[in-house]
Length: 231
Length: 130
Image (cartoon, rainbow over all chains, first blue to last red; front, side, top):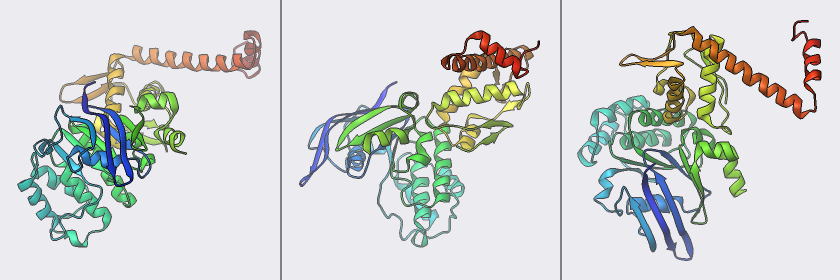
């Protein structure tokens, strides 16, 4: 299996906090990879580095054979962990905005996703619940036909029905496209059946990584492994 | 996981075991039990993945294995169908029976029973003709 993302000895310090402390990891191409770990393990720092939002203090990071850059970002569909987009938009405006601005954006697909995710094109972003907003952000991300999809916390703080809709949309997307997908989440019980590969981070490093089916055969469920590593 | 019925087949997945093997085993056993008939169409990879809420790659792998075993066949543009060859189904029934017996014998062996004692137990339960 080819590697889509390769990190070697990545480090990043914020003041006194060492967010990444020599992270080595290889993420397989065309797989759905979970980036897991407790708060402060360095997951979001790593995710942000992929799009160049954060630059490493040392180490190397190669994504689809390139260094992070604005040019490479055209190939990455990124769902940030905290953002409030589109406040002044209706759903239809958000889709038009994506079509005008985001490389690889498929407008028809975005409108279909919006419908499948239970949103109305006339709905105003301002009045949306957190779950509805998350679904809109996901629709915008999944509408892009790009090699790499990066989802930072797509499920956190979101109601059950929204989560189920998001999972269903992800499964459809995985079935239709050969895309490398990274998902960072704490909602392991509900999402672990979606993962091909998992990376468990601890104190800014890779504590364990492997193919999920192999982990199941050797150590149990992703939840079991998580408990073994962190409790 | 709770039991889910997809295309007449029953599934119950355990996240602490490889999912691919479970999907494969459970489709095989549905065929052996006749929950799905010879020649019947099975759900697409996407439908199965949606119903089981699992990665489509996992379903794909199980389907490829079924095809290699010639338990299913894919017709271009029409989908994947259970074999119409009753011999293949008979063979899978026997294979499942042998697996169950192996498991049973291994368990009794681990409890220290000899083959003669196992036979006696089976007779006492009416499991063997006199």
